[in-house]
Amino acid sequence: MLAGQIFAQGDLRLVEVPEPRLDGTADAIIFQPEVTCLCGSDLPYLYEPQPSYPLAPGLSLHEMVGRVVASSGRRFRPGDRVLAVPVQQTGLFERFVLSDARAVPLDPRRPAEELLLAQPLGTVIYAARRLPGGLVDQNVAIVGQGPMGLIWTAVARSLGARMVLTFDRVPERLEMSRRMGATRAVDVNAEDPAEAVAEATGGRMADLVIEAVGHVDQALNLCVRLCRHEGRILYFGVPTETLDGVAWRDLFLKNITVHTSVGPDFTRDFPLAMRWIAEGRLDLKPLVTHRFPLERIADAFHLFGGRAEGAIKVQVEFPAMRTDLR
Image (cartoon, rainbow, N blue to C red):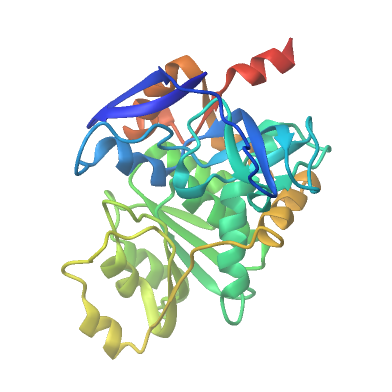
């Protein structure tokens, strides 16, 4: 069977690997992906220098839906369709062993391609659930309108924010931000973000600022500028190990509270996200802009990583998906 393997920076290839076996592993499944979505947290494995090459096969995918091929537990039977989240993003296999605790049954009311978005949505729901005071009547600023920032825009609007002010530099993402419910989408190349927030809030500034950039880039200093005195910042984007040049004294003097969020609950957050999608509470379908077959996964990564052609959510179909369609 096929798996992905990174041989050098920017060099992702499909290679042959042995079929997985349960071999007595308790409460596990052999999972066969049908369709996956690329995520910003997958990009560093391919585009950032690693200590040694080649990397172990399977890096990097972690948003996927498909079928259970075999099971050693009681939760699932062969043929069940599930949302799966592989450990440490090692999901770039045609089939792999996974703890059944890291799988969530698919809701039959929506196609798999839509329900796939329950994975990123679940991470947003988890963070929103943990925020003290919630989002109702809050002026919310969201820095970064990549896939996760756009999902945050839809969720903030749905959960009752007074205003949802969004910031990015990519025109297609700003247009999608408006479609997802932004009160105002600001092009940071053309307008000063702090002035835009001051104008929108009558000088008060944002009650909650969400950093949704993360990874190689980060925008914590901008978040501090946009946040009101005694406001809140949610650092949602995955940070680098250290953040250099952070204006911590400015944050300190404004008495800003900083929240973080990682590690959603498989028994609450992902199932709730799936319910939201299945019941039509949020329509995230417009975020899916491109689809590729597995044999072109390197092209999919290059398009997504380069933010080319208005790419937002890029899906990749495994052979099992095309077999099911036939």
